[in-house]
Image (cartoon, rainbow, N blue to C red; front, top):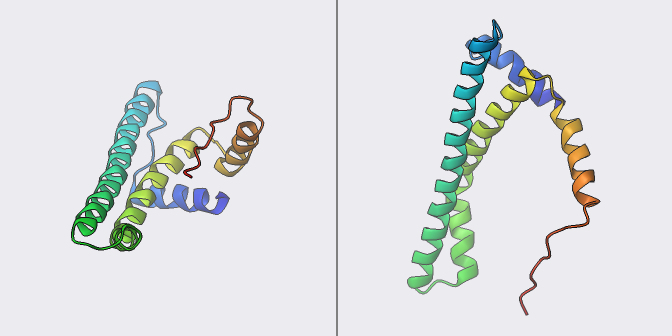
Length: 127
C-alpha cells in the first residue's frame, strides 16, 4: 500500500491532478470535488454489480444453473469492476496523501479495532 500511495502521489503530480494546497478555500473546493468524483466511481462499482446480478438472473431464466450463471456474470464484469475499484482507490489515495495518512497502517489498525468490537455482526448461515 505504501508503494501504491507513493506511485499515486507521483502520478497525480505528473498529471496535474493534485489537491490544491494553496489555501483553505482552494483545498476545500479541491477536496469536495475529489470526494464527489470518488462517490461517482463508487456508484459505478454498484452499476457493475447490478450488471452481474441482472446477467445472472437472465441466465437462470434461460435454464442455466444459479452457480454457473453467477460464475459467467462475475467473469463478464471482472475487468470493468477492477477498473472501477482502481478509480476508487486512486481518489482514496489522493485524499489520504493530502492528509498524510498512511493507508496501510490505518487499515491494519482499523481491522484490529473491528476484531475487538463487542457488537460484531452475526452471520446468517443458510441450512
